[in-house]
Amino acid sequence: MNSITRPTKSEMTKRIDLGAIEAAVRIILESVGEDPDRPGLAETPRRVAKMYAEMFSGLNSDPGRHLDVIFPETYDEMVLIKDIPFTSMCEHHLLPFSGMAHVAYIPHGNVTGLSKIARVVEEVSRRPQVQERMTVDIADLIETRLKCRGVAVVISAEHSCMSIRGIRKPGSKTVTSALRGDFKSDDRTRNEFMALIADGA
Image (cartoon, rainbow, N blue to C red; front, side, top):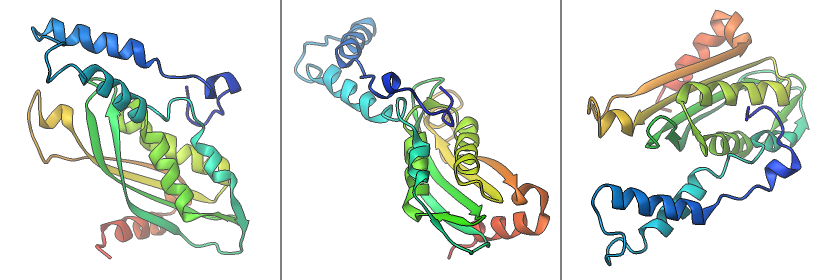
């Protein structure tokens, strides 16, 4: 489901099937040669089911609803919320990736609460996905809902699928960006944004 599309009422009320996840985890444990009934693993299927329910809680929600809270303002300069921490789940290996999101927008008659931007990042992150799509989804949501003059999103994250398996390169970061409106068309605006997120202040 595209994050900029409002889910239907039935989609919003879906429930994650914890029992099915528990059964699947038991099969995985048995398949790798473990005994899912031994004391150390007896509660593991339940714990994993609860963890998936938490990590994927954004699947059946509308992150854009947070941006329905707006306030009329004449302010027309950049608003930047930087260093928003998040953890999401890579859909290729179901391993987490964690990092920081930097989000800016240029208002056009309205502003939203600063915490609302962080809530959008948090909720979009709570679904199986790739970092590239997460970056675009956040930018599209803000552009669509706030009808602002420009949006910029930069995400930097470390992916477990690269650091603990496969090529095993811990510490390597993936950086993605999405630029809309003035941030894409105006070099000065884009450069100001990049300078601000590079500044440690």
